[in-house]
Length: 147
Image (cartoon, rainbow, N blue to C red; front, side, top):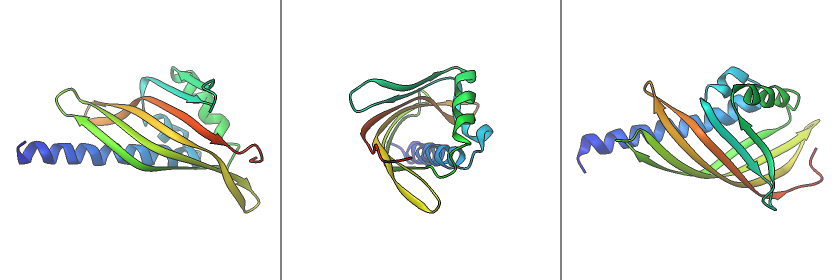
């Protein structure tokens, strides 16, 4: 592989990882427009419970806007993504990513892990920007005591 191609891949990986982090920060700080900007217009977002049942499924801008609006009322929630692995197909303008997630919930200065699991993403590069085309969260555990 030539140096220029390697550099392109590294820059794309960095840009994709930045999207992953912006997603969490925008959602947790109720910056709805910034959160929505992480996704393509035709994106799919799905959260599965530990038993495999669908907990959340969003398709289309109206679904995304409704979901993001609901998160505004939960300021004690924080999302953390860890151990991201990104594989970029420079020629196709697509990438796949996997990571782990932790969601903290709380209020009045107290917080606890409310859920954790794995994230599988598909990213596409459109107009020079990487965006999430598909995000699937597989919840591995949930804390029933979390608010």
